[in-house]
Length: 254
Image 1: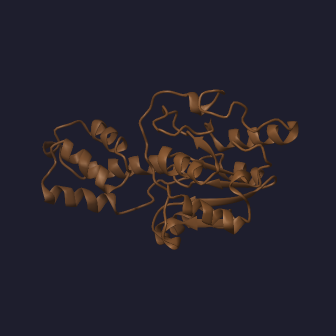
Image 2: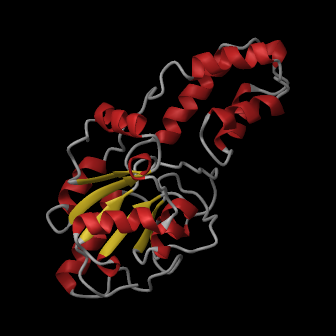
Image 3: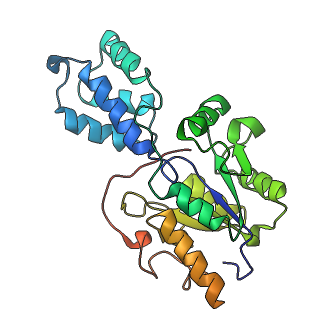
């Protein structure tokens, strides 16, 4: 990990800044409410847990969970899909510390957002959350034709900011898209573990935090003391989210 001054902090969107997982749960519960008990062989809370455990929080993951619960009739699946798709941003909200922490970090460094997904959806999500003007740099995968974990998307953001990889942090929740992808591009990776999960990735993050406010505090301590940023520098050597165990494995892509 670099000992150079941090000039740029880049953020993931889903499950880092906003509670995509919570919104997904509400959409799954709404879809299940549209189905009668007799077409489901498992309890509804079990089906929700199965959907949350899928590699991607999309309709495909919901469908797999429903099929595991014995719901394979195309007509019932279509009915569940119609309800699931009715409000893409159902209950979606920012984590309480997101805006405050980002604005505090902006007093020390340039900030940006790097997110995977269709441009229309991700841009609409930013508007729904009221943060479309929060970041001076916003990179959406569809708009540049490359997605995380490809190093090129991180390198694109670095060029926009005019900084070198060793001068940048990337903060995200996904072990592959965020942590491994950022490290492949030469950035310092920070795992944002909002849900107290056990680490599931092959490439360990340089550091883990449970919240963006914790990240801000660490940056402030580093800036005021002149010490190395995140001493020890690897998973499990400091307190915080990176040492936690337990919880569902969430694979949000944004």
